Length: 241
Image 1 (cartoon, one colour):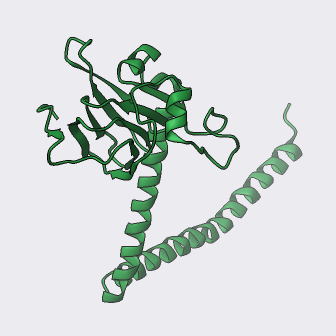
Image 2 (cartoon, rainbow, N blue to C red):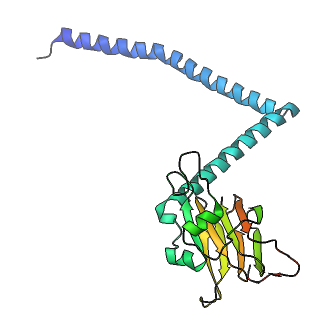
Image 3 (cartoon, rainbow, N blue to C red):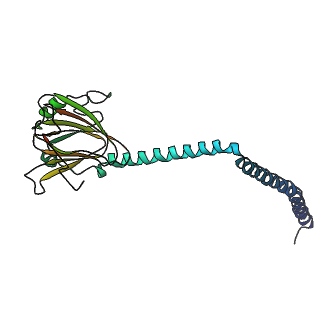
């Protein structure tokens, strides 16, 4: 048999809770309405500001910032991919020997870097110590060259000098004339994180091509005599470049 007092007490609690909920609902609705109104006012204020002429410098600054962030992300992603073992160039020591080239890591530790300040080399000594023959034995003429993305240097043949190169800074193709190869030349790719020393004996054509979309290739060329570019050099040796 049900207890009339307990039923009455439960009914009173339920009624009170419903009343309390009804009393709180207007406050909750009022808070939500205020938040929505504040957001609408802020949105309208922003639109009004952007329509004014003095908003242009602000928009330009935002655009430049986003562009800078995008370029940094792209460069980081590309660098990470190139430095990953999966993406390293598949050139062997034999491939490098076909173009009279030896490559080294540009970072520390490396055979060409004694400490974390970076690498320091003598191009002639480095070539000789690395077993790369056919280059300059002295630096009578020296040139330092920038090769911008997509640009080409060389594609010629000197008859009056031997030449030694140091190449670094970007993804770069190095091609050297080689009669022992079916195509008449051999070529390899130097990574952006590598430093290469290469030689081109007298009478041997060579070309350096920057294949990097962003970075410049840098080249130091050392010749063991003064070159007469008018009478002792063939130009445009390869037509496929």
